[in-house]
Length: 399
Image 1 (cartoon, helix red, strand yellow):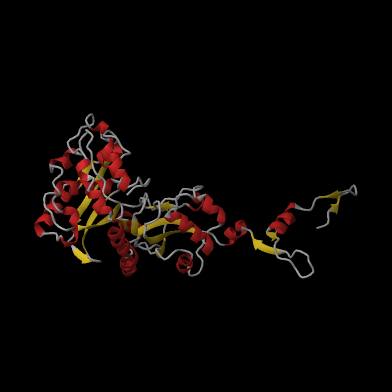
Image 2 (image 1 turned 180 degrees about the vertical axis):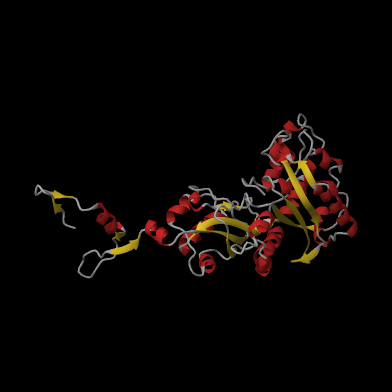
């Protein structure tokens, strides 16, 4: 654009409004015409696009097999440990739901997850909230950029201030394990031939029921001390379902529902019950673990842990029937959730257990723990911790 002369006959810069219009489309070199000159291609500016298409607050229902990933939460700037969110963010950019700069600064899209699942932990009902451009066939396009073991199963609009973590009332997890984990240490039986009796199942459920209510779970994580008020957690339900056979193994599923869980809490709750049922620890150790003194608690393998469902009862009561928003109960997606578990989660748990024998290996470490140790007695018990660490690495997330 030619510069206009001023009253003194000197040239002056063009009008700034015209400059902004001219810059709305940016030249992108790269293609070469036949005559050797560089062709000019234009790409839309993200700021202009966002003005034309405002982002909307939504929640995504996710299911994934966690094997091979270092948990759910993304570590921006670190490519060494791949997470589920790394895959999700790349898919959102590839599908055209968010601009590339949002991938590096996730707070720009108000991203939040319900739960930070640990290394190797899977999910059938994870929920994340974020702001995206609601393009046509958005779920299908996101899934096109995801591996088959990570799926978006549903999408719903939510209120602008919705936060999936803070709005979540409770979380339900399942833990699938081979039933030979409950075989008493004094009984010699081949693992693949062991069958869980009704008597032992009743004993397991008797112990699991002790966890219900509010307790100080500082001994069930490495992150909290006995005086930390956040170590108190409320457990609504915990039980073991009847066993079933699949892939040559007899399996059982433990379900636990609570307001929230600390890192490794569920795996240590289950690990301690297994130690009691097998005869390595007295029943009294469970209630003693809620007291101030340090208790040495074994941590069960992460392989069988699955985030089953997240609950939004308060949000649903307030907004689920207001005529503008949908209830976050995902009843219509139940068939998709079950299909994903049967295709990707359960086979991975079973095949990995058969090949790597993570439960069998972990069970050999139970005698190393000192279940009677106090905080002063077990300070030198590093041998047991090292042995357990060898079969179950620290995950760096929360259950």
